[in-house]
Length: 120
Length: 112
Image (cartoon, rainbow over all chains, first blue to last red):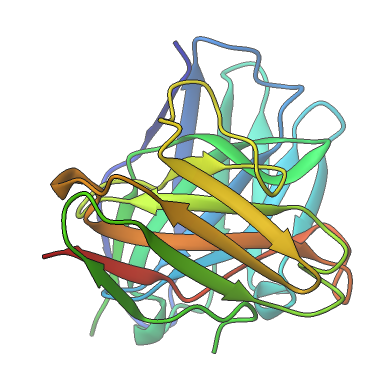
């Protein structure tokens, strides 16, 4: 059974950075894109970007370009999402999700979510 | 402001049929597949419909999807109390990179 396990909750100061990890198991890692989606409190889902580990190619939503970096370590089947210059509006639950490369938007397995709180 | 437009709420009684709409444009729904996700409180989203109207294994056939032009719909028949959740539509948008995923704002379904 495929599982995505994310790192724990974080509390960060405005202007700082946060890195969330997503370790996959139970299935091939490199050949499936991993996307990151965030959800502010009481709000909807927002796609941040993705990485295709086997070719180390990334796509980022325009809104997050320049502020987010998504990486992957194929040796540990772990994806990472770093978000910089944090502001209070970045307070949200961040999810990683396995995606099908030929069906972008098809997220079949999700991590449990990581709450990132940005507060002074 | 979400790229895809959904009604914020919907409600129906057990056993009834409810439909949730998702409106987009020619650059997203009009030219790409639509996906639907169900999110129960405090949990990660779950894929309900892919490729406009296909159900992943394990999703009951009470859930169905359809698409026409730049709009899509999710229908739930034989409504049950456990269907009370938030529902999101999603699609890729060709105005962006072509592989960027956009979501609707979500519809909170209440089972009366």
